[in-house]
Image (cartoon, rainbow, N blue to C red; front, side, top):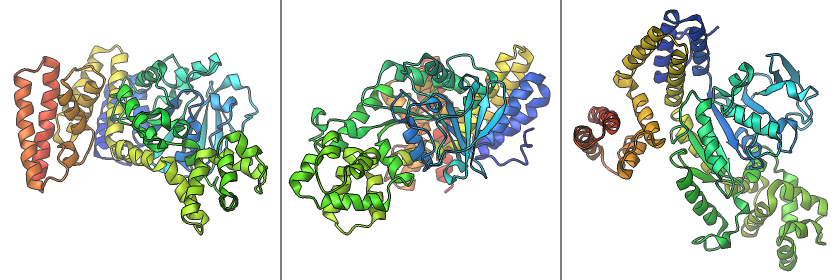
Length: 507
């Protein structure tokens, strides 16, 4: 049973308002709809749920490990990589196999502290896995690892499509993924048609809320595999080439995602999960001391790195290659060349910096964590609306609609209107001129007044004047020149600017 709204801890005031609305409606709707509302209340009080999705072998599980800071998600091809796995906070580390019929069975972690490759159960009867970890990251973020698109195994494809909501799910499997409120989509060098389809499929898994700049980011993984000399404008610089490709992919995937960020998942995993040890640092020091000719030969290819004769044992080099790949080894050697006495801890931090993980975590904070209250509240409202609509009861649907409209009319809840307008524009449901669409994205894409107004560096007085000027402009646009659909968005943006003006004026 759900905790009463007044006793529960919510992500913020918007979620609390939606929870009170949901609880107040429960006695006025059918038993089936009320049960659905109870699930919505449970999800509202839970940490933000982020699905990690992408093509097979795009490095999703490696990225999951880096985000969590523990090498727990299986990265080798096997049964477990073909299952949805939910990583969430728990007071005791444990893994539970959840079956289609609702049964649960605990399984031990393997010797390395990860999910075991062999579950010891009939795989066809398994719905998904639940992993509970005493991990600080998971206190406010539940991470859902999904199977990959593009698998030759049709059953894995089906599971991924189910995980993303594109097929009818059994109730247990549906509950494993239906709560996903945001998505991190992993791409490699080429964005394909099914990448865009997968982002569209995410809509069905989130009560018909479109993936967009409010609730989706993408990462360009395996950035070290890019051939920098083939990317125009990169000047043979690998990371510059990665940023150029990520910008191009961003244009292809926008407005389905807020941004595309380059990352090297393997390096991020190694640096964040304890995979880089003092022994590795010493092995790299030994490599750094080799003569320049030997070093250059070793770094020409993976085969030469492990097979060429030198004073560093081949097994040690193989281990480094598995953990860091050639690019990571090169970056570590560069750091040692510049600072021979660098500590193992500082070398690990340099490896982490070279992975691009910091930028991914920053975007997770700015796109997801900072706006978790609005994202969860908007997802809950979408679920409530969908539940009432699916009931087939006209009176029930009217009650829910009227209650939601009453909530959204309050100034403190207008952010939800803005998020709704942003999603409509981002999805192309309401077409706007490019400059106005960008402004809608900016107003709804941040909670900082200077960023919302596009005026970094302006004084408080200048921001206040700008907010009023834009409020008046959008009110005029809504009355003159806008289509009916554009006018509805314009009214929302006008009020957002007006409320922002009031807020700035009273500071």
